[in-house]
Image (cartoon, rainbow, N blue to C red):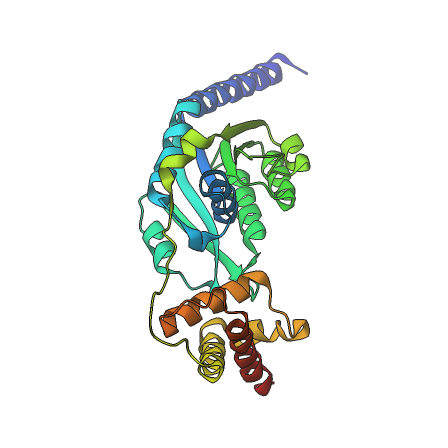
Length: 299
């Protein structure tokens, strides 16, 4: 190799080094970015149990806006040299149609609501896959360097692994459990760091709802036929609202209803009758009978 060729190679190496130095300088000037991923089902269950003593959403109100702002403030402190991309709020809804509460959350700045489905037993379906898709996509495109994940399901392990595979750090945030743990151990083992929010942190955002009672002293209770008719009416309206397929999933369980569905049925019947059915075992049985009769007649 002659001197000219050596000089030519040396020149190329020098230009390559200059290019790398410029690229490194640009990377150094680029701020890191973080995002917060919230499994709303976990938050409602864990915070509700911690503050209100129940996981039933109908028994308390959650100040989602205040809690999201608190999460943002906490992230601002932890990731001091990073900017927020956005907060992802994952929840379930019938046929993935936003409730009024979910619409209000979706309208908050820097918040994106992502919906899975709710089956006939009020169980979320598809939420974990949505979290994995977003985590993996953002990490793959280098849109985030850190992810704060508020959740506890073991199914989220694959989402954590996917994000970490692209270089993102995943930090698991949880809510204090009264006894034991409310986050899966495999998830705790997989993440880069852990943080737990205690009762004092959660208390301002949970308000227990007053128990609704209907007092009709002096008036006779509704007849079993009246209550049975109301049960049939509710079954008909739920078919429209929740879909025939979801209600058909209840049929194999006849004559029993899942606890969450049975509670929904009772609350809706009391609202329509303007009369409490608590303590009226025969009337509650008539309510279920009317519900089942209409449901079975449709299939």
